[in-house]
Amino acid sequence: MKSAGLVDLQVNGFAGVDFNAGAFGGSALEPAFEALLATGVTTLLPTIITATPEQLEQRLTALDAAISASPLGRLMCPGYHLEGPFLNPLPGYAGCHPAEAMTAPDYALVERLERRLSRPILLLTLAPELDGALDCIQRAHQAGKLVGIGHSAANFAQVSAAADAGARISTHLGNGLPQALHKLDNTIYAQLAEDRLSAGFIADGIHLPPRALKVLLRVKGAGAILVTDAVAAAAALPGRYPFAGMEVERMADGSVRLPGGATLAGSSLRLDDAVRNIVAWGLADASEALDMASSRPAALLSPTLAAHGLALPPAELLWSEQLALRALQLGPVHRDYPPPSYASLMENDHAQ
Image (cartoon, rainbow, N blue to C red; front, side, top):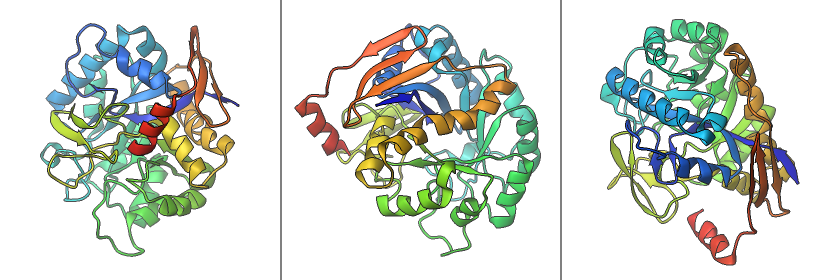
């Protein structure tokens, strides 16, 4: 079976590499990009999370320089996802993001952060209920950016107003929320009810129970896409890893948490595993699952890329009947992958 290359709109790090590190030596990003290719990801938006303006500038500038120096990075990374600091700082909504660094939305900060970058911020995630959010959404939309709602308590009216202003996606819908919400009048329902919003889902069986995901996918239909929210602990062994100035721990069950607590801190999910998961759970057939990880996010990103004069290099993947990646073509880059060994299959089953 063939498909287009997989597109992941939310990747904080991978294979031991933290994209939020703020400093990179030599070819530090190459292991992450090679590991991502081995999962079928040919396009990603490296994601920088909430920090002070000075830290955001340092982290983005260092990451941009490292990607510019990387042949694979230049092919795979057209721009960035800025997730914060314009998020809801209340407990539960903030998640693992540092609430003390969150600020009211101000598009001038986005412009400041982009000033020294060789590639743009393509996706901005914010909480539309905050003061100044609608103006920020409108300005970002007019500048050709994709705007997402996340870590937000926005109600039905606020979500609708955000979509009026230009918001077009729910970032990892169902996550970045308190455990206790009103049974119906809550932001999950508000975002599901807004037909102008696509929605990204983390299909690892940890962030969203599979049967709950079944309902969410039914509601969003063709607007549903798969994302990972991966951190450095993805495609890595259980243990502790750096993440945006914090330390996070990959547990034996594959979850990634702040050490000693229950708070999830991104995921260890691979996008090809997300595809296989929703097929194994009976939520989609192979073709639809691959579309949710490739053509759908690519189509969602397409107007934003066009607005910035960007185009993705051609990419094609070859999959086995079991949805194991066998070959990849990304522009001039070709990779062949051997069939997975029995040991690796058992390790993957244990991790998931």
